[in-house]
Amino acid sequence: MPAPIVSLEALTSTTTFDQLLATEKSAGCTSPSCGSSEKPDDLDPVVWERIKDHPCFSEEAHHYFARMHVAVAPACNVQCNYCNRKYDCANESRPGVVSEKLTPDQALRKVIAVANEVPQLSVLGIAGPGDACYDWKKTKATFERVAREIPDVKLCISTNGLALPDRVAELADMNVDHVTITINMVDPEVGAKIYPWIFHGHRRYTGIEAARILHERQMLGLEMLSARGILTKINSVVIPAVNDEHLIEVNKWVKERGAFLHNVMPLISDPAHGTHYGLTGQRGPNATELKALQDRLEGGAKLMRHCRQCRADAVGLIGEDDGQEFTLDRIPTEVTYDASKREAYREVVAHERRDHMAARSKAIGMLKAAGSGRSLLVAVATKGGGRVNDHFGHAKEFQIYEASPRGITFVGHRKVEQYCLGGWGEKATLAAIIAALGGIDIVLCAKIGDCPKDQLADAGIRATDAYGHDYIETAVSALYAAELGVQPLAATA
Ligand code: CLF
Ligand code: SF4
Image 1: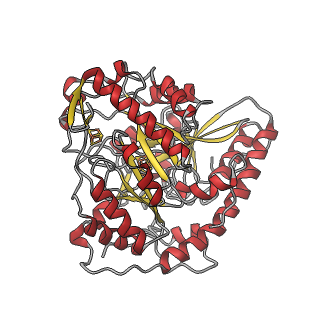
Image 2 (image 1 turned 90 degrees about the vertical axis):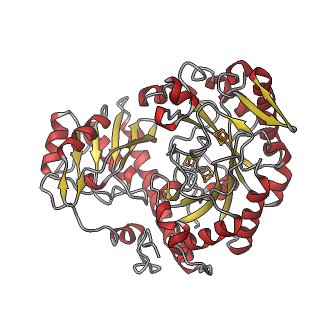
Image 3 (image 1 turned 90 degrees about the horizontal axis):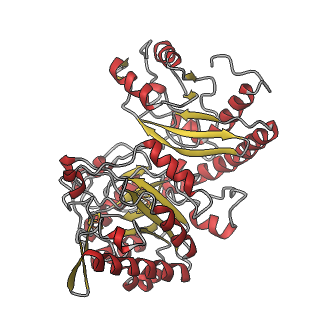
């Protein structure tokens, strides 16, 4: 069996989340160089209950809970210019072949195996390759089997929306409470540049007519879901010079039709993927362009900023992918669900989240009281739990927070190569990490060696491990106060 992501030997009712994580991967870098949680104030309690364990629908939940995808529905009724079907569905994943397509029975076996080993698991998603609503029989059979065996796993789908109106009633009957629709346009003229054809009502449509039908079906599906109170997230692929400006209009349309979240995600395009866009040199947006668009969309439909464009067979916390540990050949042919680890984990998390929420409120209050117009961009190395708890050299991404008088906001993530491998830091990797951290004021991590710290300093980026294992918001507010001279900065900064 694959190793559990969290060591559960350590789980007791008094175990804290960070102690629990600290039992994992605790060997430091030896290179010298190298449940009933509180709801956020701005959310309706009923909505909070529905999203608090969903790592995509709640940014706060993604520190604690994991999703898994099963690739059971490979058929698709739309052709997108960013997809060539040999790869994961770009609706919900980064390009990369799915290791294996599964039958509903195989999918059930995999979900049970993951639930037994990954206590953070809270959501099962069907998110490509293909369309979950079009390849409906397999989607439905999978959801029915999983709901019977593990009723508390949330069911979630992603769809291009064309077949969605035909499935809304059944989705509601199956208690599917979270649906993602990929909506890249509300103007068929724009749509014709993204979709060469669709297949609908037993016939194929092309050009503007295809885009018009897709648009009408997407809007209808969204309205039907909203009318039934099902939470919707809209994913939009940002395609520079094709729909980037147009997404401001899309954001308005989906907000008016009750979308809960809008996730604008960068086009990933590479000739090696063999997609139309890849082969014709259509580029995706860079990080600055994406952030600028997200900032322009503030005030419209609420934005999701913590998406990692995960694979269609991803397993684990968002930002991690342990899918390769759960391929069919690595799980037993007979598996029986054991709820004990997930239940124990939830108890620990419930306690931890209450504590975290209180610390967060206090930290944000402090920031607001400081009354400065300054803002600070902080990169955090974390492996979950909302804490500064990863070593600089182990991080594969940094979570980026902005501290300002408005509060502390998660603004995105920056992916990096792991600097420290086998106890030694790689010079070339460090240069790439420093480049990836451009514009960051301060890096927070649980441990950092003198060499990377000095080189970061040379590039104008400060780094500190003085707040190791603190809550992220507590650490960020302390840094912010220190910047303003309200209190001294911790010693090693
Ligand atoms: Fe999967 Fe999508 Fe459900 Fe999440 S992913 S079907 S809503 S459970 Fe999440 Fe992955 Fe981004 Fe999707 S991070 S790509 S938004
Ligand atoms: Fe590919 Fe998904 Fe588009 Fe279908 S809807 S063509 S699977 S990206």
